[in-house]
Length: 365
Image (cartoon, rainbow, N blue to C red; front, side):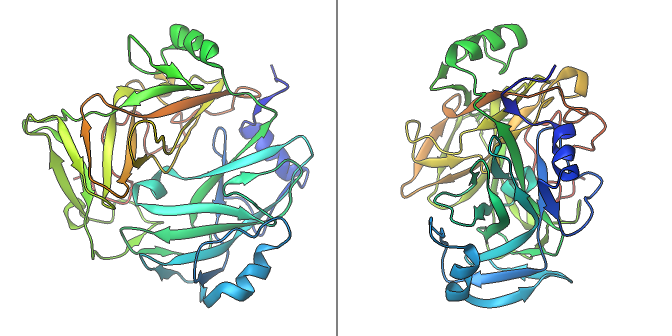
């Protein structure tokens, strides 16, 4: 069954290419289309700019780049992007959306876990990561590595895009009903408000000392975003242990990888997104990479018990997190139709059935 409103599934995303609503400089990678999103690829040039910007309703991104660029970097053979710098990269994909189709973007999971801050910009944009219905034009990615310097190249995939027809966000009542039938989070008493279902933090940890997460180190070597299992964990991360205290003090502007207390489930006919920052629960940002595809944590797709890995950064002041404290909310939307493939079901997904887990770039043994 195909609904009138909802998130486009993989089959429909392929159809956008077939109808020239999505255009790319090169043929798609075999695994570029996900169950409810499309990975976006970097083009051949990166522009180092003085500062982040939005073009505004009267300007093209290219016009702003002419004024703000410091230098141009060739990505054809790979290049290092330094921490603390802002880069704008034209993407290989461009859009010609129909009037009834909008889109939104988010960093990929591996991007967020490396503390790479990314946002998509369109011509005449007044906000990041939001692409209005009917948009026709190029896409650009703002990239700012925060903790580790990175190597990227033409074709690297740091961000992903989701397409939607109309508004298919579940109301509080619909969320509660779906939780009752499909157990969205492993909680007997779900906290639902503002269109989202709450997730809390696990600070008891695992093992005899209670491993609760990792804090990023400074002044490290570079990480190649396209290579898996390349780096020793301890060269880049400091393990954090509960030691029975069940709390963690977040230092301002340090980067942490933590994990939710609850397992998360996204049923096959739904997609989810975590709100990246909620000032009602504390002055910190959680989860740069917010998309959860259909089938995440779904038992039939091998994901029973999957928890949400959280990319956490405190702002301005130190902040104490306690075990079980709410740190974010998942918003669920309906899919237009059932995807051909679910997250983790034969897709080589890196984070299905996960607990506390660093990105795919680090050796597991």
